[in-house]
Image 1 (cartoon, rainbow, N blue to C red):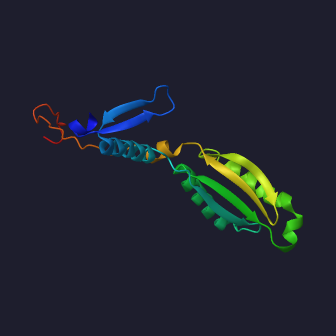
Image 2: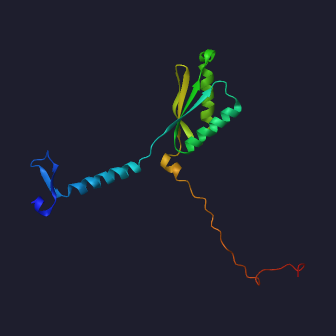
Image 3: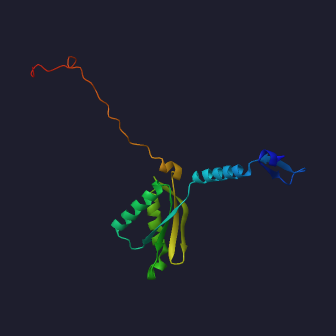
Length: 165
């Protein structure tokens, strides 16, 4: 019957009693499913984890620069993994790395929050920061288009001071 119409007989539900079949164009059906899957993938947001590394003896300017990078990543909707590397005798003072990470987390509280608290792992201490805004909200920035408006002035309606006349 399906061959007479030029379509395919497709088994929809083989486990049902009796099995359910449908007469349709199977190529078109597969194409529609692929389109729906592609559209679903486009609407997904990909979470990216950026990593910034600090040394324990970081200079103030370098600290500010890296903090600015972290803020930019968080405003963009990405997560940031902040790592403090301990070298040599610095490994005996993990509290200094903890203080550095906590100072950073207090300074970026407007754009991000601490997702995972600082944790010492071998020669480094890591902390993960999450953005306040989600990736989809961060990508939709309000457009700052200012429309120029032309104002017409009626010369008879303008008052001119007496000193100018």
